[in-house]
Length: 173
Image (cartoon, rainbow, N blue to C red; front, side, top):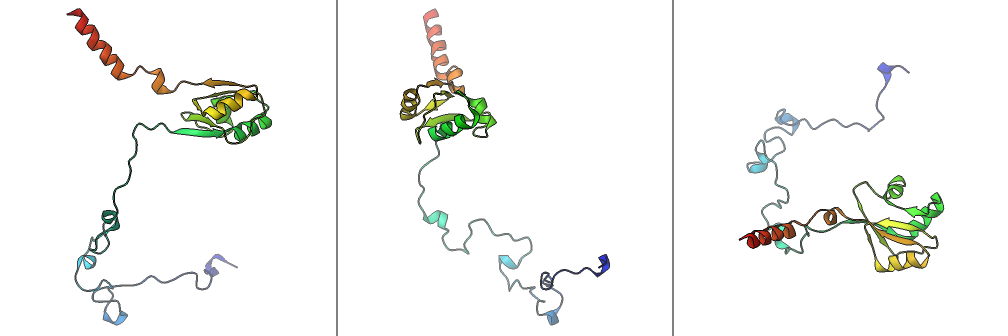
């Protein structure tokens, strides 16, 4: 076998459609684009969602719901995951660094502990939020719950600082 004798497998390649190469080819004249209309013109690209002139589905269906811009997205960690993590690592304290080291969280993610599964290990769990059932389950197992501050709680709320500024201006007068 030499490089010059190599060929692709049988029927694995297909010749491209040669359009606009004369009437004898069967694909000359209109070059497979038909007569007239936008699709026969050069530079035509169909709009996303265009359905040939009929009423598009996105205009038929009603608008539903909204996306809350102030939503706080938590990374959910279950009690069963904490139990497996404590058995695997032997750690007595579960914090953001331990979760990041085991691929369960990212640096900037907010953690919420949920009560799915059972926890028998005595753990000190540090997270941004806890469900009520998870909190009681951790404390019943003999562990501690440490609630971390979120960025919004660390920074002073803008509305309160503006209100305080207005009140100090009014008292000076």
